[in-house]
Length: 67
Length: 194
Image (cartoon, each protein chain N blue to C red):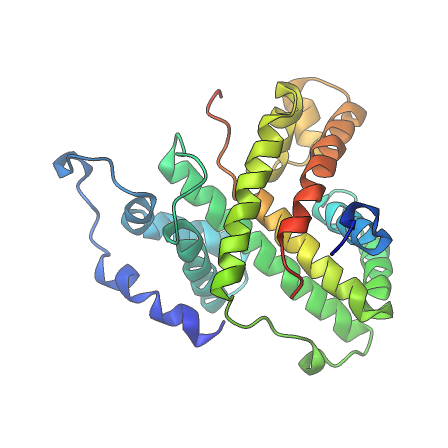
């Protein structure tokens, strides 16, 4: 958990969650590439699950009231 | 979905009757708005997930997220916020299922995968802290960045749709989203690994 910002696994996991959410560009090849990364190391899947949870939480913030 | 969630559905079933807002002296809570608009919210879930059973799971999960503890800030449009939560929980449910399905194509036994158990109270507290932190981080972003993030993440528009709506270049939209995502990324330190 220390120095998470510099953790390459966390960074890669966050990047994957971002790419996956971008549904216009996330094709079957990208999906395969991500799955290969996920199964390569249990730490990858763990970081991905956490990144996905963070991205879900980001979707639960109410819209800004200035709108 | 663990049975833990099922217990929480009782109030949903008992309070199906729409709440007459006018009779309330105070504004209805988000949970009350959720219950009063359950049929509409269920339709939102059903449009996203494949089965009625999954839609029920999504509704339970979304209800817990809304009813469990106060929201970060008061939502200007309570029903709009309830729809947002249901939609995003439903999309996350689809995402999880797709990841699991893709494991099967890699011949990995899904049974061996970790299935998330009921969240620990500590985890819920940490998630609430993370939402607060994300809200703070977003508030510090330039207005334009925040607007693009909200259209993308809260309303579910694609980058192309946002570029079209705002009349700006796709590359700019892409850059602003990356900026917001980079800011949110650091809030991950508040979540436990599990």
